[in-house]
Image 1 (cartoon, rainbow, N blue to C red):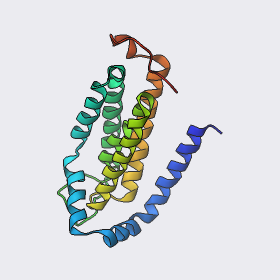
Image 2: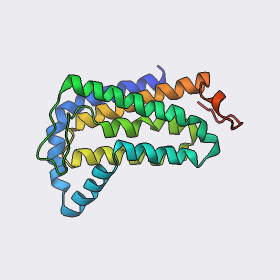
Image 3: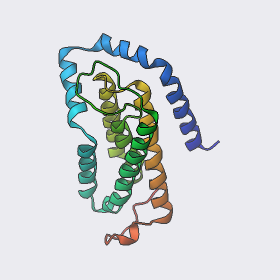
Length: 194
């Protein structure tokens, strides 16, 4: 069995199982919550909006000449995953948990923060792997903060992470295989790898 299909299968199973553990996860968070952690998680959750995440990752890619050719792929991953997420939200209409530690409007499923942060993980993996691991930890912390401040269920974040990663994987694969955006980039050199 292909490793990619195995990982996606496990992730999908984890998403399905997470629906059964939404309430338990909230109870576990209540056990660790305190005033200091509340403030840290509010900071992570409130100020790291999709737009800020989008800008941070773009700046990271701009600093490296070899990764600039991946910026269109990165943007496409962000935008398409975000649009799919909004479409799902408009169909599912899942209410947010309450009470929330931050003000949040709209529907809960899936988490846009998880979608956007995880959409760039595979693109980073194709360009520079050390930063990919740092970004993966960052994406997990952002996603956890959304559950901690009680604006998302565990299943919202799990589904959002799978959706975002899948879209990023698709677009990074297309760019790697067909090099669509590379021909528009004046920077020479091949940084593509499996």
